[in-house]
Amino acid sequence: MSESKLSPEQIKSLLLFKHYMQSYGKRRMYKNIIFYDGNEDWEEKSWWGDGTLESYDAIDETIRSIINDHNLDGKMDFEDRSELRIEFDARDNEITFIAVTYYMASRESGDEKEISELGNSNEFIEMAKSQGVDVGVVYFNGGGDSGEIDSNMSFQGGSLNLPRGIEDSLYDWLESFYGGWEINEGSQGHFSFYFDEGTVQLFFEENYEESETDTLFESNF
Image (tube, rainbow, N blue to C red; front, side, top):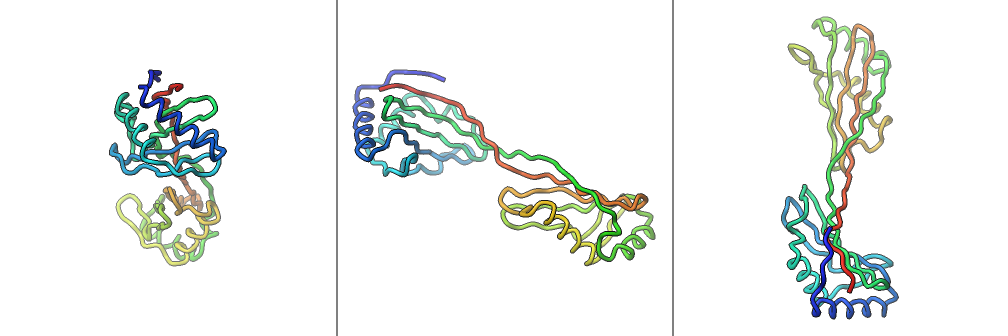
């Protein structure tokens, strides 16, 4: 984090913006500049906080001059999506620039059933045993409001098509275990069939978005 003096022109512009905020009864506001893959994508035209407040060219130009003077965008640790957040405190006369980096993370969970609980299980067990299958795996993946369970079970040396009843049961199981498994960041995982034990295990990995923040610059004016 660095703390540096602002130019007289920048201070004057920030003070004018302070009065603009106060005239609308605002104390603390923020706005974001959005980056994707290390490149600036767009800048918000409004300030947020206690409601919204429309920005204007002069304060936007001042914000840009501070970013350029202190190379703030060059100090960001870019991932797929990042934000340079500008926070403005009209009571304490303070402006702060914060890098917000978003990244994907996941957490694991699971469940277990008897294979006999699944539809068409007898037919499927006989089919697998006739192929000499001890352990088989069915993968699934979902995200962005669509998801799919693989229609084949993979095992060492080959694969088997899932009977409709088994496939439907796996979809029902997945939905009851984690409703919305295919929505937004989605999830992935697999079902492991252990035919000797007569069990099937669900290995579930839920995706979610995390963020980290780093204060790049702050100054009073």
